[in-house]
Image 1 (cartoon, helix red, strand yellow):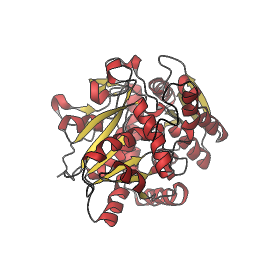
Image 2 (cartoon, one colour):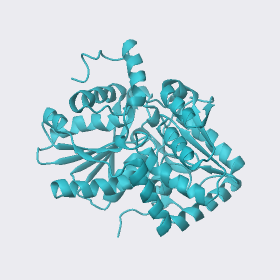
Image 3 (cartoon, helix red, strand yellow):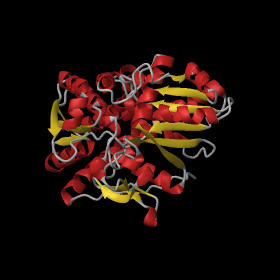
Image 4 (cartoon, helix red, strand yellow):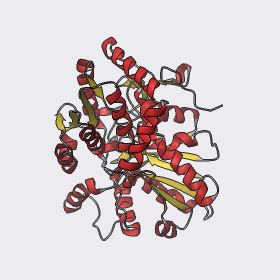
Length: 407
């Protein structure tokens, strides 16, 4: 029996420790019920699964490697570090695993239009990509601030035929993009499919996204057993909404000898209040139609990585924290940037700033472990989208010079 308790209504845990669920207006609730019915109908359907596997192999490029980072391992002098190379997927991140699955669902639901939210732009690009592939009109909501710092991904979405709409309220980042997308879905659910990008939102989104992203952990589990003949001691991934982490964690959840660690963004420092670490500092509350850990001051939500800039977190992560199955730590902007440059210089792999948070934690933990221990780091995306942002920060002397950092 699994330690994971989740009801058919998407509630994780029980009593005062419940997370997830669906706290939405009646009109939106009807749309979500329709979505859940379709998901339950097709997720185990043989024809659906065959089509999904075809596109994951022939279009996305799965399975991707579990790569032994030998130079990074030798530099740190502790545990063996393996990188799950989601950065090698088509479009450059884990997001395509989910968008392929959901677009196949949208097609079966006869959706005439697809909408999505995006922070760093990777989910937006992945959504625009599958909409181009299946010839479905696409609108992407993105915070005005994120549009500025991820201009390359905005242009990629537009090349792929998507309309990009700026969310101009509040902090003008990911939270506001979700607000706009949910409002659109509530108004147009009769012909619109909301392709949500992370394991957040009202039921069935967290379970649906986890279903499509768990291929990460399933592959990693098979690959590490083939390479090392045993399970890893630690698996780790960055956590914003948390889909790449849930994708890695879920297949290991009942392997209690495997430590699971999610890495949140400490931003400018937890003590400053300008971070995006609800699991480290927040409390249970309702946001975007579901219950999870939420920051006390959402208006101060900040991360160097646009994809982690969210004041809430997936309900499954909230539940893992509550029952102690996973540990959640935080890494600040400068530590993430240092990891970004270190992995680039040592392994020739430029990671996304989001993924760099997990790499930074690995750089702290690995030296405290023995050389016969094993760690898997989910490299959720590549850093092409971030090089302009990093270049501008270096030019403005926001951080140490290139010669001083990442040694």
